[in-house]
Length: 184
Ligand code: AMP
Image (cartoon, rainbow, N blue to C red; front, side, top):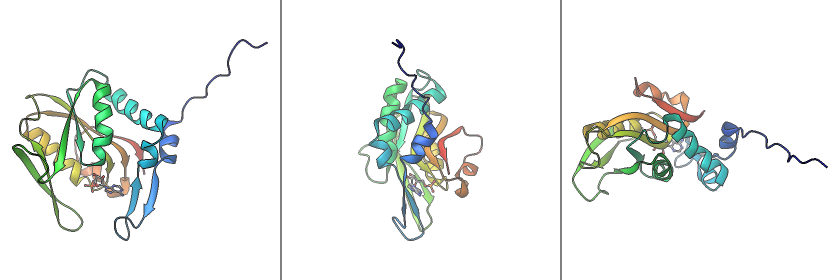
């Protein structure tokens, strides 16, 4: 009788993640293909693989705070912060944070958006990773990084689950460590 259990094949993380992101055409408006991460979040292996990949990229214990960008960035950033042994800081849309804030405005395809962070969210010199679900044109990430730095922290890198490379968001973040788990 064979004493050894069958070996477990290695996990193909990019293939798993790709299979758990759903494309929703024409949402929230015609012409946009929305990257829906809810199937990935519902899959324990895929969700855990995302958290592990971001933490392994920098190393446990090397980061003081993880910033999540409202709203889907929060879902990823909170368990990543826990796994780093770091704190969590929200960057929110205008008018949501209750205490004094810094704010940064940036242009969207139509109109403008404003993000905010609490002025006292960081201890000066805190090492920070910024997390979001999708990097598209890069305006959101650039605004969030600007806010974190104005609040006195050091941005070590940006981690995103999905990078839409055809929108060249990376080009708006020169010199940054832009870490994406899936490039489309
Ligand atoms: P951008 O500022 O153009 O890089 O847009 C990034 C922000 O918009 C992120 O917070 C994403 O959650 C969201 N976003 C942009 N494009 C998409 C997309 N195709 N699918 C899902 N979310 C998107």
